[in-house]
Image (tube, rainbow, N blue to C red):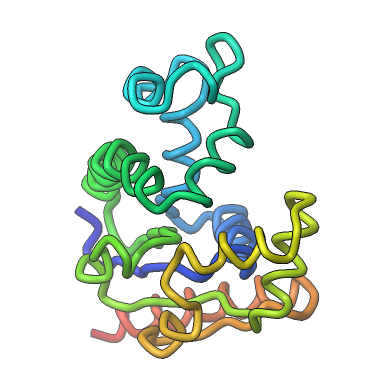
Length: 199
């Protein structure tokens, strides 16, 4: 398994994906929970039979998952969200563990629900992408063409980003240009390598 795991997390629409993308583009080994989840729920994905069994045909268009229909259900019903998480989380965790086992040296583990599922215990250090809630709401609404209330409901489905920020070793604010916050993440990665090489 990777000998040094850096957890990358943050609230919804806090710019974490941009940081992850920049790290990957610069050759950093990144294990991406969202990418894994998307593959599990893409056409032919391993999670689809369980999702169909639990939520029925109403969240499918033929053989493909209707992500908007499923989102509308799980973000308005905590029990439904728990049911979906019970399907996806064990599969995602298993694949993350497999990918980390195949990684030599340090790696970044990009997990939105890092604290919520207890995966902070896998990490030697944690970075948190952060923007104030007002900016979170604006970004969520722009992304999904939803109301202010719906955006808040999605944000509140996760641990408050201020709590994640408090627990993290490093906080990366992402209100500014994407290149600026990406450069901060790359700087943190280089710092981590320097520390490890100095041991």
